[in-house]
Length: 169
Image (tube, rainbow, N blue to C red; front, side, top):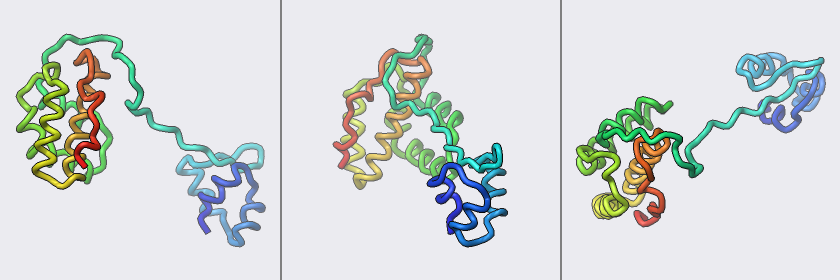
């Protein structure tokens, strides 16, 4: 039985209670949950601990400071990749998209000179060259880099805002 799912459902329980429900010796699995920080032991009860949500850039707000600094898109893309916690396969996919699709189009442009029309043009090119999923991934990565640049204060507004990635499909 999956003790993690059971703990998540019960929220608070004793060792005897969970062993009775699971009908097995759960002590080692509970110790693993304690070691991983997924539960705590307080006042004779095991308590399931909800994982903290990671902060994302899905909200819309202006950056606090506009840095007014010229930076090339390729440099911002590198900065973006180096400041993200990515799995190896995601990193590899991003590097491929950047090398073969995004940087040839945006690489030598300054980040604050990229316009909505350029993004739509890039989307059209991607749509004509690739399957919808690949095209969508490339456009989404550009949008993520632009959003990151916006929140870091390198651009005053995000031209990606309003681009409908569904146009790739």
